[in-house]
Length: 200
Image (cartoon, rainbow, N blue to C red):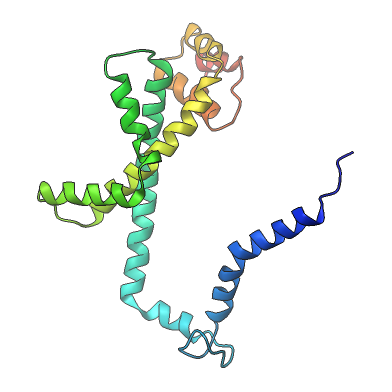
């Protein structure tokens, strides 16, 4: 039977969560403040949310943020998965150390340094800064995390499932999307799935 947490652990937990989430709660509460001053509560009001929906600049900024997030997340997932497949499946090859170093570099480099380096690169090649440069930068930040997670999933992957599917006539690309891809994302592939490839 597990022992009850001590008062020290409970106190530490409460203080820790309060430190993390109490400012967010206060921010949400004061977003309904009628006053322009965030430090003075003058009454409940939703007029600032109505003003937000009429502010074209803020709405455009939110739309750009949404597009950057969706595009960079999609690209980072695709490129990170491909990089993880290369590192997990190709064994030793010429340039592997350099390749893995470039993949893992954003994990250990401060984000300010990486962002400044990308900015200097875009300035050096005379690239206009805008949506695409922001998207490239965010993809660079995110791709390494995808590669780490996918590579860890592939390290314990049972390749007999893929071999069984291909032995039964499933093309490699279809095997990836029907067997490997679900395994990467935690959905267990079945050994008899290869029969579906042949008959279906």
